[in-house]
Amino acid sequence: MEVKILFQSLLNSLVTFVFGFMSFIINGDRPLAKIPPVRNPLLLESASSLAKKIRSRKLKSLTIVEAYIDRIKEVNGLLNAMVSYRFSEARDEAQQIDEMLDSGQVPERYSEKNAPFLGVPLTVKEAFSVIDQPNTSGLINRKDIVCDRDAPVVDNLRRSGCIILGVTNVSELCMWYESANFVYGRSNNPYDIRRIVGGSSGGEGCILGAAGSVIGIGSDIGGSIRMPAFFNGVFGHKPSPGVVLNSGQFPPASKERSCMLGTGPMCRFAVDLDPMLRVMAGSYGLSKLRLDAPVDLRNLRFFSMGDDVRLNMASALDPELVEAQAQVRTYLQTKLGVTVQRLQLYRLKYTVDMWFSMMSTIDTESFTHMLGNNGPRVYPLWELLKRTVGLSSHTLPAIMLGLIEGLDKLIPERTQRLLAKLGKLREELENILGDDGVLIYPSHPKLAPFHNAPLLYPCNFAPTATFNMLSLPATQVPLGLSAQGLPLGIQVVANRYNDHLTLAVARELEKGFGGWAAPIGMGMYHEAIEHDTT
Ligand SMILES: *[C@@H]1O[C@H](CO)[C@@H](O)[C@H](O)[C@H]1NC(C)=O
Ligand SMILES: CC(=O)N[C@H]1CO[C@H](CO)[C@@H](O)[C@@H]1O
Image 1 (cartoon, rainbow, N blue to C red):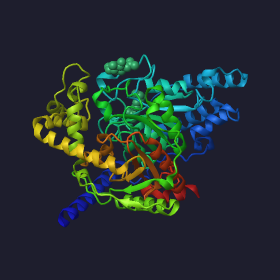
Image 2 (image 1 turned 135 degrees about the vertical axis):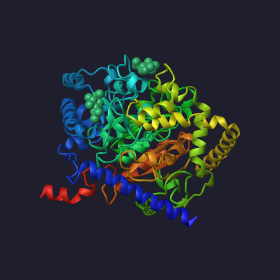
Image 3 (image 1 turned 90 degrees about the horizontal axis):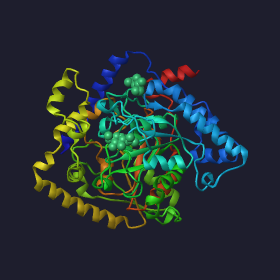
Image 4 (image 1 turned 180 degrees about the vertical axis):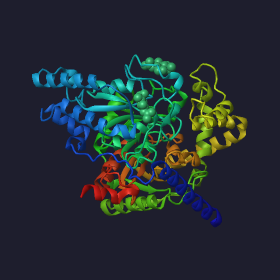
C-alpha cells in the first residue's frame, strides 16, 4: 500500500514536471501572457445587484453590456472562451430596456417579479440552443448548423430580462473535461493560460473566472458544471434531477439521462445562484424545491468526506485541497458552532465503475453514432490511426471514449453488481443526510492541470460524477487561490430537492473565504507581475 502511494506521488511529480517542461519549450522563457486586471468596478458586482440598479435607473443596461463587451474583447484573444458573439443585438436589446425603463411604462411581464434580471448580460454554453447561434457541440460535421430557436432554459432566462452576449466553448460532444475541439480550438485558464479550463462547460467557467461574464448556463452529467467552476474559481450548481428542463441541448437529453444530467447556473457571486435557479426551473420544476424555506445553518448537521477516501482510478487529493477542506471544517465549527462529522462510505471507492455502469444502462444512442452526427457511424480505431497523423477531425478523448464504449455491456453481471452497490450507497447516504444534512466533499483531486494532462488522469471526474449517479444536488464553491495562484474549491451536497441548503452554505462560505478571486495571472511568473506593476 505504502509503495503504491509513493509510486503514485512520484508519477504525479513526474507528470507535472514533463507537462511544465513541455509548456516551457513551447512558451520559451518569455513571461507568460496574462490577462489584464479588472479595472471597471461594474464587473465586480453581482447580477442581482446590477439588476436592482438598472431597475432603479442608477445604472443603464447599455453601460453594463458595454463594460462586459469591452472585457470580453480584452481577454478572449488569450482565453478563447467565447466562440460566437451577438454584441450588436445585445446593445440593441439593452437600449430598448433602458428606453422602456426611462419611459416609466413597464408592462407586467417586465415587472421585478417576472423579470428579475432585466438588462443583465448572460453567456451560454454552446451546447444549448440559442437563436442564430451555432449548434455544434464541437463536432466538425456540425459546424454550419445554426439554431432556429432557444432551448427552454435559455428562453426562461431571456424572459427574465437577460441579454445574451454569446456562446462559450465546450469539449467534443461535451464528454471530456478539457474544452478543446476542431471547430473552436482550445480554451485557456484565466489564472494560468498553460492550464485547462475544464469541461464540458469549460468556456463558460473560463469567461466567468476572467470577469468577462457575471452569470451563465451550464450542464453536468459527470461534473461538467462543477469541474470548470472549480478550475476557474467560480460557483456552479448541479440541481436535483427533474428541476431544470434539460431539453434543447446537443447531445440531446433523453428521458433516461435526465436522472444524471443537470442543467444549472454558473456564476461569480453566490447571491445569484438562488434567483438564477428559480428562473431556470420556472414552472417546470421550481415547485419541487423549497427555496423559500428559511435556513438556519446552526441547525444543520454537517458531514465531511473525501480527503481520507481514495477513489479507484482517480488521483490522490492535492495537499492544498486537503488543507482547504480542513479550513472549511474549522470555519463551520467556529463560526456556526456546529460539529462537522467525518464520514466514511467505502462503496464510494467504486465511483468510476458505478458511474460508467449507470451510463451504459441509460444511454439510448451510441457515442460513435453521435460522433458521426447520426450519419455514418464513426470507427474509433480508424480515427485513432488518422489522429496519429493529424487527419482525424475528432479529439483524442472522444476517440478513446468511442473505443471503450460498450465495454460495460460485455460483462452484464458486473454492471448489475455495480448497480446494486450503487443502490445501497444511495440509500445509505440519503438516510444519513435526511432533510437537514449537508456534506462537504472535494470538487476535484487536483488544481487546474496543464493542457492535455487530463489524458493521464481520465478518471479524475470521479468526485463530481459521484453526485450525478446519486442524483443529489451539489454546489461547487470557490475558496480563494492556492500558493501558485490557482483556484481552490469544495463541493457542498445535500439530499434530493434540498438545493436550498447547499446554496445557503455556499453563501456562508463565500463570506468566510472570499468566493471568486480576480485572476491576477500569478503562477510561475509571480515576480514578473510584481515587477510589472511597480
Ligand atoms: C440542434 O441540433 C440538434 C441535433 O441535430 C437538433 O435536434 C436541434 O433541433 C437543433 N437545435 C436547434 C434549435 O436548431
Ligand atoms: C483559437 C481558435 O481556434 N479560435 C477560434 C474560436 O472560434 C472562432 C469562431 O469559430 C474562430 O474564429 C477562432 O479562430
